Amino acid sequence: MTGRSGEVEHLLRTEAPQVLGALVRRFGHFDVAEDAVQEALLAASRTWAADGVPDNPRSWLIRIGYRRMVDLLRSEQARRRREHEAGAAELAMREPARQAYPPQETDDSLALLLLCCHPALSATSQVALTLRAVGGLTTAEIAHAFGTTEPTMGTRISRAKQQLARAGARFTPPTGADRDSRLAAVTQVLYLIFNEGYTASAGDELARVDLTREAIRLTRMLRDSLPDDPEVTGLLALMLLTESRRRARTGGDDELVPLEEQDRTQWDPGLIREGTELIDSVWSRREVGPYQLQAAIAAVHAAAPTPDRTDWPQIAALYVWLERLTPTAPVRLSRVVAVAQAYGPGRGLALLDDLNRRHRLDQEPLTRQRERAVRAHLLQLTGDAAGAARLYREAAELTGNQVERRYLLDRAHRLGSP
Image (cartoon, rainbow, N blue to C red; front, top):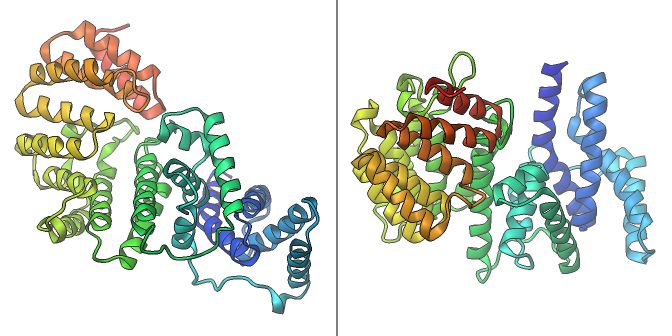
């Protein structure tokens, strides 16, 4: 049953954007369509796990979604236009020849990305709504990505859907005026989806391959549409170079293996080659953005045949540049790691203390757990085993990922911590 449930979950995640796209294209009411799709997915998860997947799962989901749309539209205040749409949908369901199902080769994911990044929404709402509607993340996962609570994020997503409804949003390509802002939101969405997949915020597995694959797939689509955009190319390169290390990140017992201890023969040479070629193709351009810089850092790691041959001074310099462009807590903490590797743990601890005084990385929701893990590692390198063990335990308590938790507790135990 577990195997079948996993297959069903993957299929539902893949089909959800296509079903939502079909309903939005037909009815034009994103807020109602998203609710209808969620109910269709719930019905499918129950039925398919027990009875098996139907021959045409997308049509099955669209049919159920259409029926729910009719119910939802009828339940709202009567309007002539909505009643007409509901009646047309009901007629289409009775007469298969008139059903408005999208062709199986149609992929609405990118169109939904742009719809969710509608200029009527704030940047935060654009990202949150797209993660929910296209990426398939739960509200809890999105809340973690933003460093906020699940109820707060649920309210934000609901309000975003209402804003789209009031704006009368449709499937429309971005205009010159809003193209840059909508594209920035789309790339941020894809980046967050990939990160949630690469290190899951909770659960018994370190990574969620379905999310990383989906993020890479959507980013490839985006680059196909915008081949001359260097940041889109940089984002795809970053994902590929990061994903190339996935197999080496866990050992035989699913324990976490840190970067410096990974078997680099398990890194995927095809992904490394493709990612490196992509970042090289745009690196010489005049303007370099955050995704290109992160891809360049990943390429330096990928180029080192052994950990001791990693060019850490170059990585530390790239992080200085990246911090100037995106002065966020995660970037600052990553610079601490690079400085410690390049110039010693003492320099790393001094920088970390300074950043905590000025930016409170130990209190920031997105870094408070990793700040303790980084400090623990640096204390361990300086010989402070007791201090390191204490911080490893604190970091373990702050993560919902069980693989990461076991790793941190094991580090504390090896240092003599009870």
